[in-house]
Length: 434
Ligand SMILES: [Mn+2]
Image: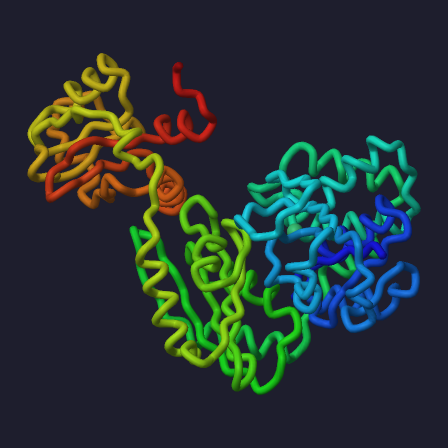
């Protein structure tokens, strides 16, 4: 007997991968547990008879000779199917786009960092020249769109977009897809969103803002993960973590990050026994030593341990910085900008920043005699400075929010450099000279 299995709390990529695998492995039956995301449950309630799917309890595990695992590489996420863990002579194939360093040892392995597991299966379907029917194409497109945020998450690759194209060419229905991708919000979701916002505690870590909210809902909340994403956008922090008490026995933490390079949610969730991607993840913890409030303490500890390595503004900044005194006449400032090909000049000195004058400010001069006026008459006195360990993306956000193009870098009260829009653009578009 051949079976296909995936992780509990089954999302659409997992379900679509199970269904897709039933085509790649003829005679295989797909196992889908009862613990599935709400939109997956809604889909199954109307579509399950169209596919070769069974519940974990319906499988005779003694008769299983081949196991195909999709969308996870960890035994403990397979629920009941994990009874096969120590089975001898079990042939295992694995299809996954996560790299969670899991413990499933497979003789065949297709594990690559693409946006969705579906993409890896589509690659194989294309290779075999298979034609998909519109129903199957639709299911797989929903899985692909859900895991890539409609091809917008940073984890999305060109191959994901090509897979979407293939599924659309095979008749995937976008009306059906959007129905299951955007289930309507009802009172229960709105109330839980309000509770999340109300209970928010904010913390800072490495200049990043993080919101944490603990919830004790009286019953299971459908679409909680989607509400957490919305919550992050509303409170507009770099990351959020929502701890939700499920019942007496367990609590679930769901994390979402604005940018997985800043805060790797998947990494934090793995420390709590869960998993996920840099931008999204979750963990379910037994309450024993993890009552919701203790779990929160533990979560904060794990967050505090995270280092944000990699490039910082100290790597991008220009130095030494050009300073003028506050009595420098404006024509000298203008000439200095022209000679040095810079758009901003700081006023004061490295120990005492008095202001900044930028190219744009020169337009304020209406009369010729004003060119002899001191720079202090035209400079901006409120200057936003940044610490050297800020990430380039954070500096960019600050520039956008404040609509400024120069950020002096300050360390121990001393100005040690300056970051400009050009530095940021050069970095983000990889335009640095080799
Ligand atoms: Mn997935």
